[in-house]
Amino acid sequence: MSRSRQPRTLIAVLTGAALALAACSGGGGSNPEPDGDPTTPSPTPSTAPIELTYATPSEFSSYNNNTADQANPANAAVLNQVLRGFWSYGPEGGVVPDTEFGTFELTGTDPQTVKYTFADAALWSDGEPIDCDDAVLAWAANVGRWPTGEVDQYTKAKLTAFSSLTPGAWARASMPKCADGDRTFTMTFERPYADWKTFFGPSTILPAHIVEKRSGVKDLISAVKSGKNATMRKVGRFYNTGWLFDPGRYETAISPSSGPYQVASWKPGKALTLEPNPRWWGTVPAARNIVFRLVHTQDQAQALVDGTVQVIDPAPTEKIRKTLSAAGDAVKVSGHDSAAWEHADYNVDGLFSSRALREAFTKCLPRQQIVDELIKPLNPGAQVLQSRFQLPFQKGYPEFAQTGGQDYAKVDVAGARKILEKEKKVGTRVEIAYLAPDLRRENEVELIKKSCGKAGFKVVDAGSYTFLSSELVRGTFDVALYSSTNSASVTQSSAVYTSKGAENRLGYASKKVDGLYTDLAGELDEGRQQDLLKQLDTALWRDLVDVPIFAFPALLATDTKVQGVQDNPSWSGVTYNVNTWTSS
Image 1 (cartoon, rainbow, N blue to C red):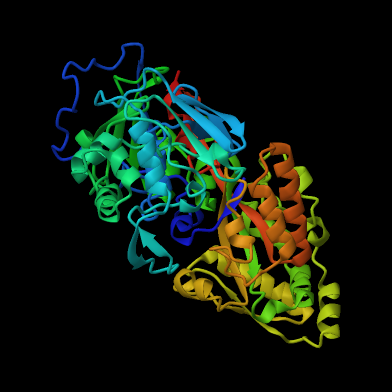
Image 2 (cartoon, one colour; image 1 turned 90 degrees about the vertical axis):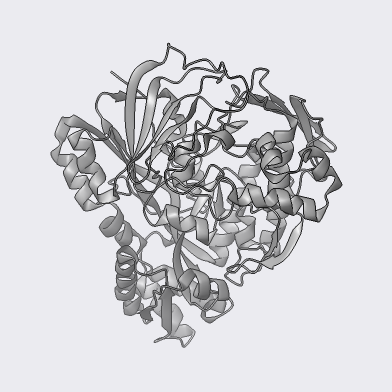
């Protein structure tokens, strides 16, 4: 997994609504008959007449979960089995090929070429085949072309016709080579690219025929080939906003399914319900209906105990833990790490330009105390995080945990003070910035203040409401406390650590690290990729750019009769396999 710092989309994950979704119902009379064959068969009778309910604290909002503004866990949870792709996130956060949807394979290395094949029976739920133009739309929407002349208000990056969460990666690949109606297409890379497996994943492939109808562009493939800015901006306008729905106003006619479930109803503020997609060509879903019921995070545990819902995965609190514990054997509960992780970042362009000063502060950081007092009560198995690229639930973590972080496992106040005295820096004022209000981070700063105060630092709580839009972006901080979420991409963290990285807010530059990322980007061997990531972890520990502290605690609880529910700390969350959930 690789690190991603995208403030606007990260915060939903970091602040607590780990993977919450919205509740639902079909939308205020906005469910006309789908296009295609009017004799659409009814859901297969082999699906069990079971209804399972998942609690979500956030309302669903968009069928398109790929745009920078709408990508969030609430949408992902609903869409996991509504919009399938060539792969899905596995329980360890890695890429797991989805062979029911189609197959993909590396067919050449000079140049690097990848062949994709949709399943022969693949159809949108409105009867339209899933084929070449859908792949071309996904590529066009994420490639980052066709500038609008506007800039992002946060990053100041130049905006393009399509709002995309990850345009950098797609720009490495050629337009899919295929013709309208083709079930097979290929993509070619000018240079070898390590993350070639991460294209066309869950919810990425959207219906091109809908975009054509709603944008007025009759032939999407031809439009993309010609690349006329005005035409593509026209397509982009619908892509960016046409699938953004007000609560309860889901439009079935423009939002067909490509998975085993489709949206059946959406009652705003209450619940969203999925039902089997009658045109799904793969394994039928185990339960007839999945309901996403809107329940405030702090009320989810009681809702599970009362039987209002059968599955919850709220960000854990002591109150939630206490409620579930009191329920005894009536519920199944497990604690685990999420893919989000806390870190302290040094501004190496400012106060912490001195590596010696960074070492002194790292020595006095009470990471174990922070975990023991603030995290273990919520996840008893929590431990101090020693890597930026692997998390404790991943198989490779033990090796990554020995790349340098172990040298700072214990607080060394005496060692920190010795450095400050040598550098004549005793009494140095350090402002720790973070997004306020945040009680846990206030407590983190208080623990750091006590520990590092003994070493000779004067630590100041500098939490603010403007942290993400001002202090972080402008680099006006000494130490920043915030979180990142790791992904299936092995190269995504290059944006954070390379000299010219788009998300490098630290003022950090290292020729060695830049070189390692260059090697990593072009490495196709997965074993060698891991070796390079370990070298990167080692180099970053040596330079003390930032300090991992802990993986965010997560919790999963279900009714004892429910089966098939499995923790998944990735972006997809626990509903990644909702099509297999059942009940005895």
